[in-house]
Length: 416
Image 1: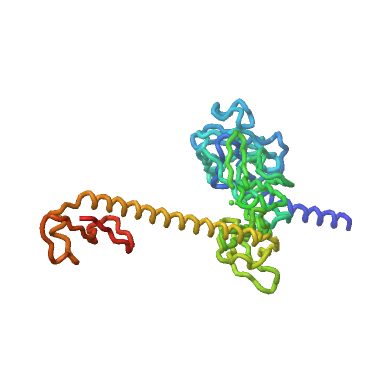
Image 2 (image 1 turned 180 degrees about the vertical axis):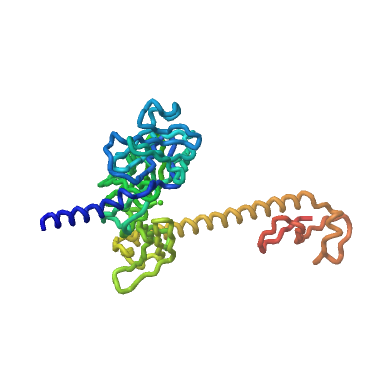
């Protein structure tokens, strides 16, 4: 009875082992691999063979090109000169791992490779039906940046930067232009590709808004690539100290300058908060919003500016320039205008009098008896005028074509 149970257990064990031992020759490798020149590439490879397990010393692994050049051989001296010192197996052949590593990768390494296994005192096999094509790139792939949450001033945020590579033993080194808590890890993807991911946790502030967040990946061999997707940080309003009220003659202008993101709503009020004073104008430039309020002199002594957005609010009290000083200035300006106007009128009248006197003198010097005979009208002449006696008469002269007309009732007289 004991022998029967022992035989049954042996039979069950044989059934479990038999399918593995009777497995066919096959290999699992990606059909296409992409590597970066100057970095390394690891071609994942796993094989099976139809036979009992062997120890490591019984296997000879060989990688060949389409031209039968030995990329790798368990006997180092048999490796092709162009691959000498640059190839190795990263796995254990006794565990059916035939992964190939080329480091550093040259541009001339591109091509098609296949694996061959030789098992001592058993068999050998070339997997000609399963080959891998290797492509060699001159420049690395660009990283990608993703943000885990919306950025708000004063609140912790975590963002990540990822880049693909083909060298798990020597992945690219990722750096940031911001300080914070860093965490990096490399994960295997499909077809022998890997992804290196670095996460950065930091607390942004309002000064970080619109600033570049730069992720840089440096690969073995010195090649670097970076990306920068600009920080969008929300923060509450801050009313700048440059906000103030100024005056010109009888008009007061108040400016409320607000730095915020998103843009703020600005409102004004005087002594009564329930009575809003409406903005004369609103101007927005990036994160800066300027509200303008204009009013007649004396409408209030102080005004209050309030700014609010989704992140918070802020209020500032502004002093309106003193009204009395402005009145004195206005009176002084008015008096000056009246004085200047009076002086101008006096000068014009004086000029007219001078011109009238000059015309009078000219007329008195140039009038002759013959000229007077044709222009005058004699009235009140003695009816019995005879002889050579001189007759004198006062005659009013009209001055025509005078370029300087002066409004006056004074007549110009000449003695003839």
